[in-house]
View 1 (tube, rainbow, N blue to C red):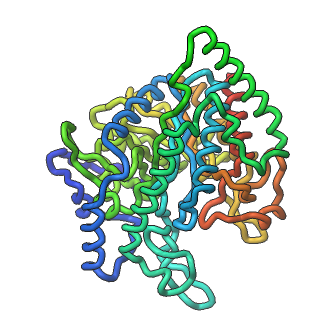
View 2: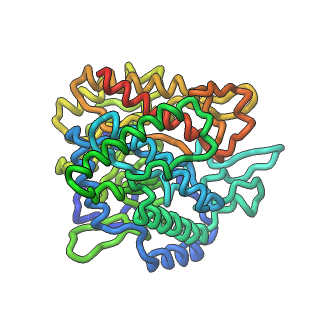
View 3: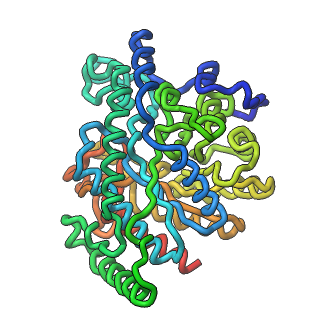
Length: 454
């Protein structure tokens, strides 16, 4: 974030394209402007991926989370790929989030709001615009919505047609997730359907199955007294992604009948990353005009003098459920970086949902060249976050995680104590390391234990 500057935020001057008058960071350079315009025009005519009433329903649920009546579980891939748009990968990703939410509902004794980082998480920010290998320099890989990961001139060329492909793959993902949920995949009467075969030998399996059996017994007891409880046959599920590529978001920003204003209908819950949260930048300009609930990633270098004007710009009317702040400090910095922000926001009486991202501040590289995260550091940041909020008199209302339902070895530690040597066995991520199913479930159990101690 930049230092606070004075900006006039007049809602009448906002349009879905007004961001183009600001500095837009982390955007690809498209060589062929007419080709880009053609792709944006086609995307503008395609149906939206979500509906305005789903967006408003999520905003209401987030308002309840701000009041401590719900807990937000937001998770999914660091970056989706077109190749992973398959039924096993999508269903396994949904399974792990459902199982984690079951653990949280059982332990926290409150509803859990489930939000997936998918059906649109195809763009990623990069530290540099180019990458050099063996004396050859090409554009950096910025995600499947922009270019390909292969180190060739053709693959790395930003291709506007990928905007259309991203919409298609997002639609396929959303369609399958909706079909699974509407078909009873998330039915609490049958949580055993969510099992992942490869985790049979997990040290956590027995504890999880005891929990499932207890929930099943409780549900059957209640239905014996009161009859079938329809609400347990399905769950609400929402999508989110970092709204990084503004041409894509602009094309899916629509007005709808009987509702004022504009909705980003590419996702329910878009967020601004730490690298693009400049108060006078294009992303803040775009986000201030949409009616979706929105989030901002907040890193350890952010000061109250920077954060408070950003809150004013993005939620000037202090609307319930509108703004979530996702802090990602790192286990070594959270104790010093987070308390001043909590104190400042509390002092100003601003309504936000605080969420912890214990992943992004704890990334490191190993001696054998893998980017990884240590489970102990992830756990440490999360433990500290609960304690810091409790000391400040504020409420930690959720977690934001990079995870997968696949049997990957990308983060070290956890129940099976994965080591540096284990990383090469099943390291599949194109960008950031993710928690595997077992580590994700363990983290959910640790959240419950931490909250019960508090």
